[in-house]
Image (cartoon, rainbow, N blue to C red):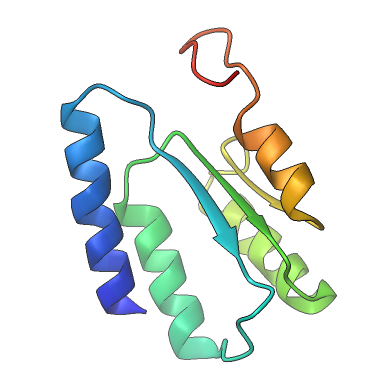
Length: 104
């Protein structure tokens, strides 16, 4: 997970240099290996990576609630959301931002 976070940080830094929005879509549906170590790595990544919006989906009910709690504790609930389906996540992620202007 730490390697993935490092790669995401490098990629987001490149996107920011191009003055483009950093939007992320995270699919938990195939990931069954979350534990306290991966949770800490995810929290650290959310703290360190500069992004405009991240939409997550596919988490089981317990993981979804834990993720929402972590997001709120980090103060990023306005730009990081958890959804039940990919379609809901994409709809929010690509929603037009009246200030920044990205989205469809």
